[in-house]
Amino acid sequence: MTDIDSHGAVVLHATDAALEMVLELRSAEDDGESLALWVEVTGTSRDAFTYDMYFQAVGDASPDDWSDERGGLALVVPAHSIAKMRGSVLDVNRDAEEGGMVIENPNEPPRPAGTSPQMSGPPVDLSGDVAQRIIQVLEQQINPSIAVHGGRADLVAVEGDAAYLRLSGGCAGCGLAAVTLSQGIEVALRESVTEITRVIDVTDHAAGTNPYYEAAKK
Image 1: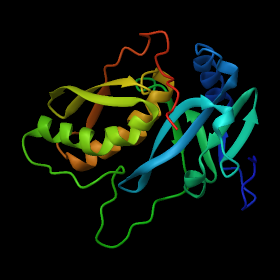
Image 2 (image 1 turned 45 degrees about the vertical axis):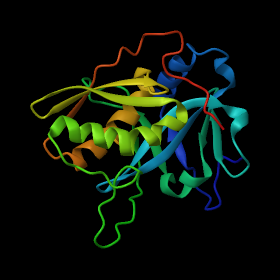
Image 3 (image 1 turned 90 degrees about the vertical axis):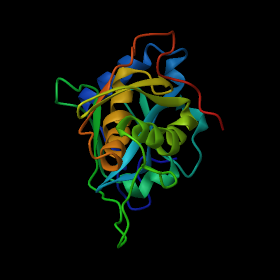
């Protein structure tokens, strides 16, 4: 593992504000000092990558993964995401209403002619009403992508142009889940179900003894 990749570049930099937020979230975890913040690309939607962010043991990183340590926090980017994230910045979301964190990535996914990139998963049958189509996208595209870290997203309600979701398992925990929601789930839903322009998280992120972290199954 190395803080500089083969191109001589830092793959992911965390700002001081993001570092402070992640360390605060990690302090609530059992054996938190052994956990790194893992950030990976889960797919694409429109002209941007989608992401998942989670706590996992530092020791689970392989020699091909990228890692760095700053201020007592280890960052890990899995090998398959390194080229897609090179030069990215993890920062706090300046939008007070949304909160959480955002990833600023200078890289864009390739756009082969005649294709429409989406969060990873098979093509979705977008038939039925809005709620049915949202559920189809969640079940066929989004949940398979985040299930590897124990995460799940369920539709609670649809009101006008807004879809209300509840996150559970590895996706519960306000600071980290905001990235998975806003830069993963929301972009995929808005692309596939054009009637939806807003995705609202109604999860009780404070519930449970370990509201965010679940060890990934390897």
